[in-house]
Image 1 (cartoon, rainbow, N blue to C red):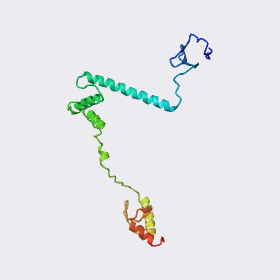
Image 2: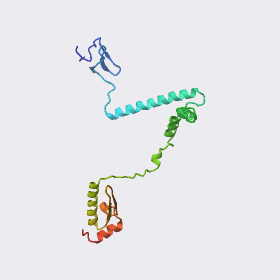
Image 3: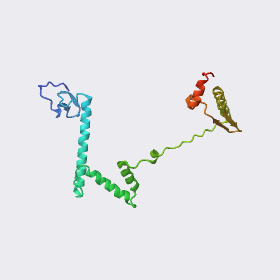
Image 4: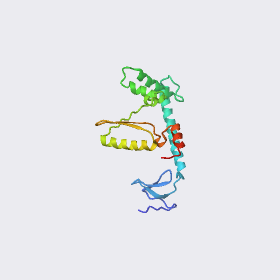
Length: 194
């Protein structure tokens, strides 16, 4: 079948013109070349604007439908965000009902949506204690490295050894700029000799 139709020639019976000017095969549903497309999007900004407008219209329709249902009850006039207030009231009733099995979910919904239910972990900083277990071989290598560093900076590191445990307590030796300002001034004052 020839799909290139001259603009002046009549269309075959199996081809229809869609409202936007595109040719479509009636049997297969495929789009055919030709026709004058009238809804072409010229650039991506037009596509974004079209999607945003569609979402805006959808929100308006949802709000209108929700407000219409709320207004049927007679308690609200069905304007603005009355449906949000009605949903909040229903959730609060559920949250305050001790017989409801959805009590916690409703309370969580209310607190989350109102922004008043901050998680406790965000409010209180956590203290993390790091415990490191080493065998004697690794501990002795670390002790040797610490002793070398202590010798380079002229300060002491106390190392106490047992059969299976090595406890090390490092004093501030100014490694990587962690020393106090007085320590740094003292090491700078000695001419940088190491």
